[in-house]
Image 1 (cartoon, rainbow, N blue to C red):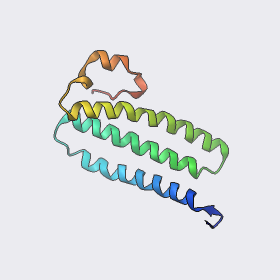
Image 2: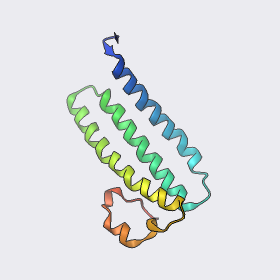
Image 3: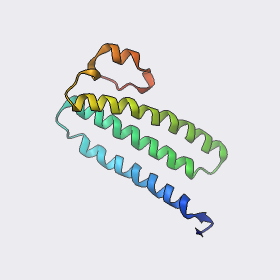
Length: 118
């Protein structure tokens, strides 16, 4: 069923991505209070990457021109891939492992998906 010339599936997708973006943004404030430094860094990176991906997907869906849609979709793929590195960093830190501090693993990953250790 279409309302206002827009399908219900399109409305569901836009609403889902909007909620995901908002949820990640709100969760960032709470994640900054995690006491363990490495776990906090990993969780903040994961939420920022996931929220950025959801925001770019939302922008892709509501893009006014095909050129804008192409750019936002491409950026969403890049940002979406960064979530893998953030997830691995977070999992390593949360479980008490040291993979996220190991220089071999940090150098073997692509610089675009690594989480900074500063």
